[in-house]
Image (spheres, rainbow, N blue to C red):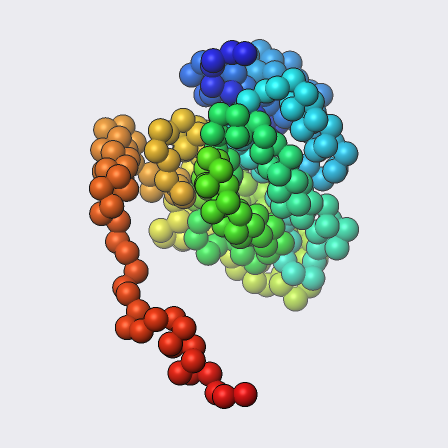
Length: 292
């Protein structure tokens, strides 16, 4: 068994996934990259990755991939889920068939894959690095269903994190900024086409006018490479944070000093503790609940 670090990059056929695959391969990691498109196979192989087929919307595809990796006894240091498929459109403008497929791709399929690959993560005390919901409040009108699926995955990870952490598996979320490349323009155009004179047409038109004019202060723009850099940092960090914000993450010496300070605080027991209750919990309940 190779001693090199091993990563499975889910969604390597997207712009962010390609950058993550390239960066991890450049760092000497053994990378398994998943894609749904045959056109990406040669490109990913040229980067040095082992290419696997995966469709998160298909339970059979998730099962076949997990069974293959477990049968080959592939240990995982990092499971990087950076699926980027977005579902643009306001509430009422998107068909439920599209919603169900998107929900399975971003939430149910990803959760199923995590559960099936836990033995591979336990073998190396690996971590799960997930591309979370965009930071900020913009684009909510045209990305309602997409954000719902992203937040559902975040909530599920928050629920299972204590069990995963106790078993040696870490969970890290990376939240990109509102604008990633040309995604905002693509999303607004798609949402406007779906609206077609509907109730949300005027709202989407006003938002697109402001965004294209650059009148969204405080909303950072980022390229897919910027988002991928933070995903790679989260996968390779010795003491990763629970959440990272793109453009809000310290790099270089500052990052190392910050991580060392957090590690020292944990070891010395200096982390802030919740205030103690004035009375035992049992006493509080018996005093506030009425007699039967």
